[in-house]
Length: 378
Image 1 (cartoon, helix red, strand yellow):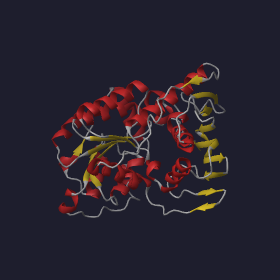
Image 2: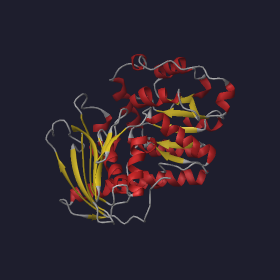
Image 3: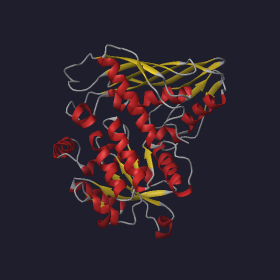
Image 4: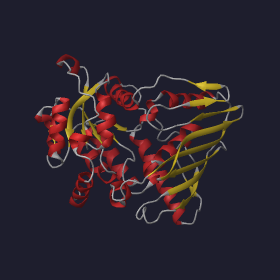
């Protein structure tokens, strides 16, 4: 890992709320018997920012097939707070420098990389070389080359690789995929997918620093919109063209603010996506030969909501992160399908690069030569 990235990351975190305050609203861990732990996979979270603090760690208190076994952080104060709250033994606490010694730890089976994007490849590869299964948060890496390196490292080490794409385990999204697969409303003709939020709090956050993020709204929220267009049609796109807009250049100095893109699919279906760090939008809508379906919101944490031309959708809602991590654990333990394999992350990064290239070339259409089914999970 480049020293500059580590220092900059630590400096950014230091501007936020203290570790103890961050943990204030997290439920206390329930004590787990050793016999129960042996039936579950131990997960180590690498990076203890907001997502690990408020989503992943609480979800791991409720998972059936895995549990929070360890942490990796560069902040000693956080290590102490998490150790006390989650009863994490000292031997299961690592920092970024001694991370490779995780290889000797038999209690940790899965490493979940929850770091700034510039650090995904390094720690995914180091985890694989240590013999640990890997979950990598989105986007998978800074570019397609790094995606290939992660996939190869996991393959060479004989470990499983999954993306942190929680929605593939979520019932509303699964129902959309079923509609498409079973042609419930006939062939899909058009999809509109929006994924955006308005950023106003901290112009110095790592997501607005291209060296740490690799891009702006597109690599952050845009991945959800790309995913929606793909599972909303059940196909990979064959072409894309894109446009970029900026209305707050003084705030978004280094990364993209708002991007729109248009996809064409092999069936003749088309899709339009919008992603932004400057507006609020979260919706998937598809019109078909014999009706329509919609999720609104489509990619937030619970609650989601859905409806179709035949009526409302109503599913039990629980932690998406819980469902996601249990599904990956079942993939490892019982050879269940991998719902979000590494190839899915690579495919999405290939699309991201094509979108940026289209923008650089004034909106010129870019061809996408995916093999049928490439990047689709089980």
